[in-house]
Length: 307
Image 1 (cartoon, one colour):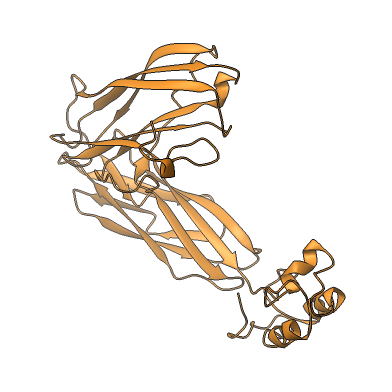
Image 2 (image 1 turned 180 degrees about the horizontal axis):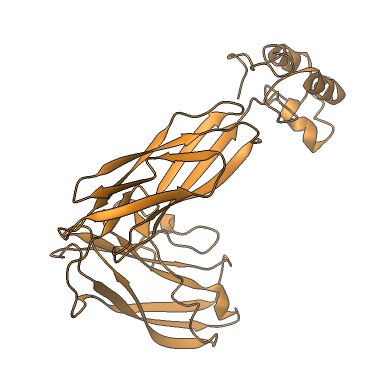
């Protein structure tokens, strides 16, 4: 259940409201996490509810949005879509240290869903007949970078290591985006954290968010492959109305078409961006600000231009 009103959001999701540290684990061994799950519906389709058993091998319990939490699969998706279910939800994991944290998360797309949900008997048990094997650890699990349109952000980094005392981990690294390169593309670890550099080439990319995935694979590792999500956000100035990375005659033409009198709201939604001083009109004061942004076609936007 949510632990406070602040945990509730309009989508009916509580933000990782239940978590607990698990200590005394043996790195490289297999573990089973499971709980009893019951939910009842009154008026909404049960296929709308989602429930996840998350594992964070760093053991942290402060941030429910941390990229280190592996939420796994939706535990309800495999159940028969009936209006009352009592079942056991489970997943396996391999810790990279002696402490991990277990997280429970539920979400529903309706803001006032008529359902009740119960979670009980949460357990973590070591699997039988498991011997230490190489364990692939990649940190962090998500990279977020931002840069102005037309510029390359500074390189980012992840680390790869064998989190088990067992043997040597031999790994390879790949990505699925033309604008991303990783170096090195392979390596070995006997326990040390190897740095991997992520380099960006944004030429030809448009304004907005671009996503890629870095995949680290290691034959013989029980938890291979591991994926790292990369979010690249390219920003531009407010005066770059056509989002092409410069402020030129085309943008000036758009600004002219949006001019009003002081106190007269912008004519259309697309003209609201021309309200540079956010006073609900497009007048001379906005033009003074716009002038600071003019750099010319295919030229850098002046540094003083508001973004």
